[in-house]
Length: 334
Image 1 (cartoon, rainbow, N blue to C red):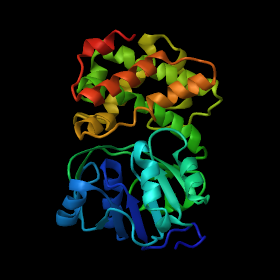
Image 2: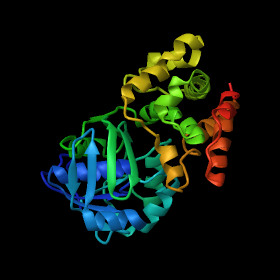
Image 3: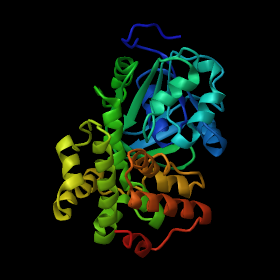
């Protein structure tokens, strides 16, 4: 069990719950800097990690981590990182509840308020929120490719502890408002739904003028909803509070520069986005926790977010059918 001192000891027992794309990179990098790492995984991914190790390549270099891989934790670690998708968070926490009793936990997740939900479920407040700004693909069991390196942002309770713990392994910083940072990441994550619907890379979607117009419309709804809710957006990946307002209210020819900047930051390696990766693996997506979160918050405020609502339905259609849709289906939304 970790002490109350927020300074991270040189070597700790770290559990990463969910060794997918983001969790796999975090686990491998923690192993690379000398921590004792245990991961949880399932099916072919669990078997591959057990047999060949957890292998990462790309933006943070190549490393094979010979970590302990389990379906569920068998002992309490010094600190834990929850990196499953929002759709699997409750199940993962329930499966590991005993091992996580009183253990400092970092919830690295898309969407809003995952750390608050985890704290309520576990019955303790030693829970930090985290945001990963890297882009990574995990389409082969046990192997993760980092297509764009990026920071990990932490905040809230235990934020200082995890900033110190992760800082040696990955570019990490602490935010004064994890809620504001989550909203900025939510805005960035609007790039996920359309690639998942049409089966193209994020970069190709942004290059397409018609698809970019719909993407910008979903970003406008997100920015306007957050601002209406009184959110203080935090700067992330060059997306400043001023640019958030530009997305929300500037003429389209100016506001579209924001998604174009996101494309440039992703580089030339095709990025599928996390939602499309889930579809290609036959898993449920996080669309309800991303675009759906905008729809829900807008409804709470007495507003509407029709483009995001339509994108949620189209992603679910692709989930059900297993077939991508023609870009023209999306272009007509805006």
